[in-house]
Picture 1 (cartoon, rainbow, N blue to C red):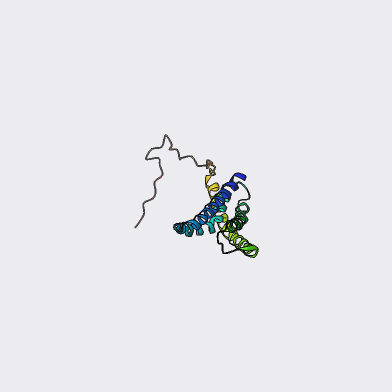
Picture 2: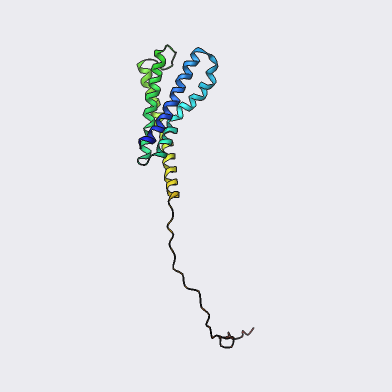
Length: 165
């Protein structure tokens, strides 16, 4: 269970660190803007991918473990925003009120995305577990094939009466 959560958390953490590095690099050189735009969409939805990875690999409590990616994403978003502000980089959500608002919005959206990713991961894990189980093979009772009488001849067999048409 810890290993499955660690895979999801490492993915979420790695994307947030890359996002942070791109924003710091953008403050020094303008040509990082394309990567920042792409990473904006990835960072916004990474909680869903982390929840999918966690719930797909977890042995128990799949969906609940997937939902834990939402607070992790909110804490990382808010913490890195405060760290960017401390480095002197301009941020849109500055100060305590801005950070609380960022945390609330990140948590709400993270719960939604984590719920979707967790549900998909849980559903696929259950489906793969069901398909992986071997079906028991049982021999169905069958009637033995009819045995021909050894002394039967063509004359001794019953003959159907001719039909009158």
